[in-house]
Image (tube, rainbow, N blue to C red; front, side):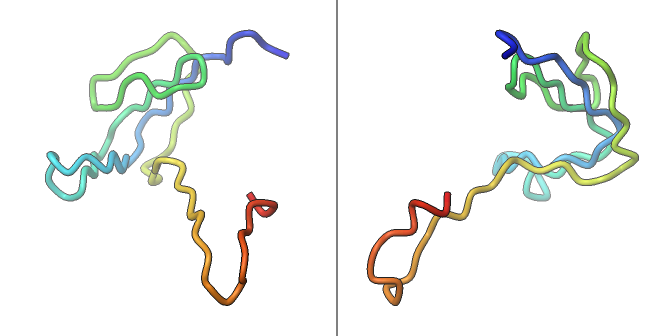
Length: 82
């Protein structure tokens, strides 16, 4: 195993930040996402990092969303599915 995840820069992406303070639900066009040690450390047009660059070619980059809900009909939990 790695003790440290490799750094990566995702460039030229349309990024959904989910920041309610930003207009348009936090959508940022032509942005970079810098990932260091397995965590997002910077997002924006001017964000820079030392890792390899992956060109998103305008594709949408969103946070990892986990929908961990259940319905009463299941009569229990669904933890084994996660």
